[in-house]
Length: 173
View 1 (spheres, helix red, strand yellow):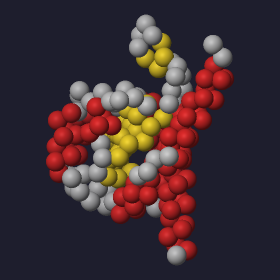
View 2 (view 1 turned 30 degrees about the vertical axis):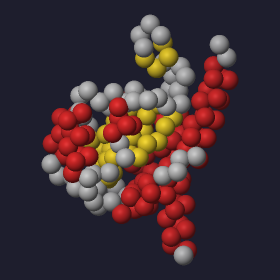
View 3 (view 1 turned 90 degrees about the vertical axis):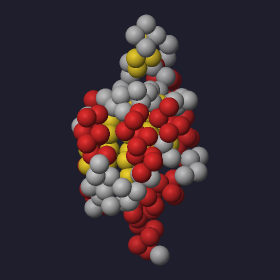
């Protein structure tokens, strides 16, 4: 297996999916108008990528409230409203641990943006907006991803760059 070629294909496919997302303008609008932006990563790697995304958004005066775990997501749900925004980064899109919380947020009208590996998954079907990354490296025996979080980071970086461009355009209009 040529890992460099697979990684190149994953990066190319991730960029293509991002560029063809028809909801980017709506996502930027929601990011801009949100009273509070929350971000929940289902694993340590996802939380680290969201932490970096949060650090970048400070450059444009957007503060993200990082949700450390499922229990805190349940607690924070009580403070969220339709004027807020929730990002959820997940490798699999499996929502068994927080399904009831997400359904409650959806009923409350809180916009949810899922960021998942490209697959048909429950999280992306529940979220109003979806961003996808591709990651082909899997250990078939353990059913886990064995590569870095490069393409997840790429999606978040593209989202940040697009939001900065969106803000600059609005300032010049």
